[in-house]
Length: 446
Image (cartoon, rainbow, N blue to C red; front, side, top):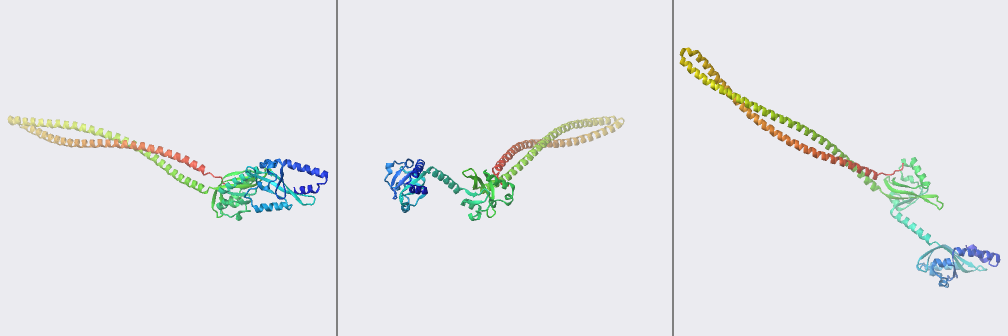
């Protein structure tokens, strides 16, 4: 631009050249914001593009100093030297922040170009500018977002082959390295050697180099060999032509969460084993209770049979007692008859002597029968007492067996409930284990 303006000054006396240059100037004025100043910064003229960008009318700024567009906080000494430089014929270009009429900031990409007379002396300054406010704000927004991310996340940048370009403090603090120790090194310094030499690892960087992003949980190795778990994304960055030229990784250290999840999973596995063992024990106890209940029922049947048998024995013993009583009565009657026979034999004298002997023998036998019947009666009475006592005890045993059977049935019912609850707990723990396993599922590069 400066060479163009110097050429314009030198060729001003040649009509064809002047016409050509004038056409170029008009073309620039149609596409750019243009303003002209005296060498001291006083405004001479501005085109519509400039006036529209700054919100002024031409008459509002003509004769005013350039400082009306400058922030009050601008370094005054630097601003004075800026105009001295232009006054000496030196141009200036760059990105400038200016202030519009309504106070808003306007960013321009501009060049301040001294215009020379035919003797090479600067006579005025023309500024050509492009409003880049939207671009600056957009870049500032992106930069602000990236800065915010960098403050809370670990960030590291790589070439497409995995060579480390730079890393922020969060990443360095997480891995224990300094920037000097990692810059220029390959990403594999953070990876287990077996993984770093794997085909999967090579394909990982090939995918990134082709522009494909990758995200997940990764196990990395710190400076001192410590394992580090990162929730991260590897993001290829593209140039203006859509070609990837570097990779930026954003990561969060989730080592504590992963270890806590694994600890929880181990604890749940142990608890699940205990619950399953309890369920197995409950099942065994339930089966034992069922077996005991069956045995008790059989015992009740046996006791009932014993009670019936003892009752039958008692009845038979009573019948025997009655028969013995009858025998005793017959013996008594026989004894009386024998006595009567003896009396009659005595009356008969010698002719009844033989009969008397027989009558005495009969009486003697009747007495012995009475004594034996009495002994048998006592034995049967004693047996009846014992049988009655046994019957009472057996009946009591039967009642006890019924109570035991009832209790065993209650225990069996309770054990069945415990078994059901244990099986539900085991099923619930299995679901929880699967959920925890899914939660702790990680992506590790091979």
